[in-house]
Image (cartoon, rainbow, N blue to C red; front, side, top):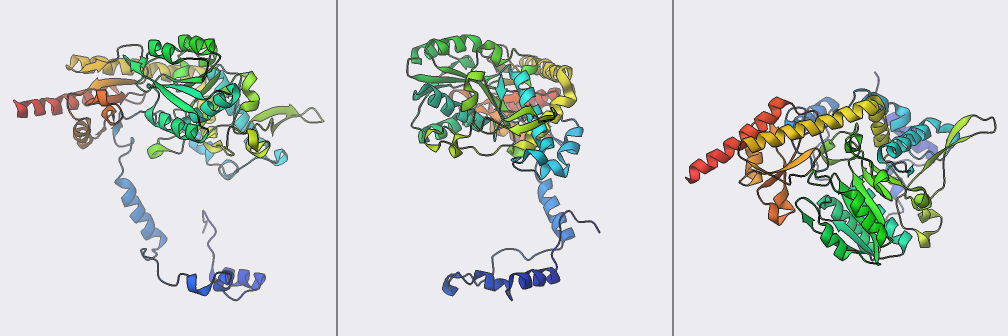
Length: 455
C-alpha cells in the first residue's frame, strides 16, 4: 500500500528509543520538573480511523461556499479567475513543493530558474527593471515599499490614497508604527485620489506617495500625474497594481513608478478563502540594493554554462542589522511558481484576452444594473469592479443572493461611512452572461420585495 506519508509502528518507536539510549518517551522530558508536567487528558475528541476522519472533514468542508458551486461576484482583492490545469500539475511535483531556501545552487537549479522566470515576467508586466522572488502578499509588499521609501529618502512621512485597499492601508499603518513613520491618508473624490488634496499634503518631508492601479473601487487612477507631483518634492512613487490589469493598462514603470507592488493571485493562485497568496515587488535599478527579500540572478560557470544563484543579498537584517529597512527573510516560492506557470501557459496574447474579457463583462454588468434602475457610482474608466447602490443593506441582499447560489459583492459600508448600502461587485472572465443577469435580477427582486413591504 502506498502512503502519502510514512506511518510509524510500535517497533519503529522502540528501535529509535534504543538507538538514543532511553527506555521511554517520558525520559526525554526529565529536564522538565515533575510538578509542572501535564498529566491529564486533553479535552479533544478521540482519535478516529483515517476513513472516518476523512468523511468528517469532507462534511465540514462541504459547508463552505466556493466558486465551484456558486457564481462569485466577491472580489475586493481576491478574485475568481481562470487557472490553467497545468498549474496544479507542475506545483504538485515534489521537487517544488518540498523545496525551501535554495542556498545551495549546485542542487537547486530548477527552483532558482523558476524564481528567475517569475522575476523576469513581473518585470515585463510592470515595466520595472528588477523584481524580487516574491513577498508574502500584496498588502505586506505595499507596506515594505513604504518603509523602503522612508529609509531611502530619510524622510518620515508617507501619503497613501484612500482608494488603496483598506486592509492594505491597515498593514501599512502597522509597519509604519514600528519605524516611527507618519502615514497621512489622501481622500478620494469620485472614486479616485483627490489630486488637489494630494498637492496640499505634499511637501519636502514626503518620503513616498502610495496609490493603487486599478484602485480598490476598480477605477483607473491618473498615476502619471501623481508620479510627477511626487517626484517634484523628491519623494518615491509607489504603485500597487493588479498584474492581470497590466495586460491592457500601461505599465506603472512607463508612467514614472519607482516601486511597483501587488498580489500575483489573479495568475494561477486559488482564492483559498483568503490566502496564502503571493506578493510581487519590482523597482528601478537605483533601488536594487534596497530591495527586500530574495533576488535570483543568472550567470555562467567556469565552463560557460548558464546557471542561477541568489545574488546581491539585499536582506540587510542579516548583514547590517542597524541599517535594515526590512525583516522579511522568506518568500512565497511555490505560489510564485504557480503564477509563473499560469503566465507562461496564457502567454502575452492570453493575458491580454482575459484582461479584455474582464473589461467587456464588467461593462455589461454596469449597463445591466443601470437598466434595472440601480445607480452605478464612479463613472470613470474602470477594470474588474463596479460600485453599485443596492438601495438597502448589502448584508441582506447578499443573504438573499446566497440562497440563490450567488456570492454577492463586498459591503463597502464596512469600511466607508459614506458608502452604506453600496456593494463592490467583481466581474471576471469566468462570469457568464446568464450569471450576471441572474445577479441583477435577484438584486432587483429583493429590493422590490422590500419596497412593497414598506409601501
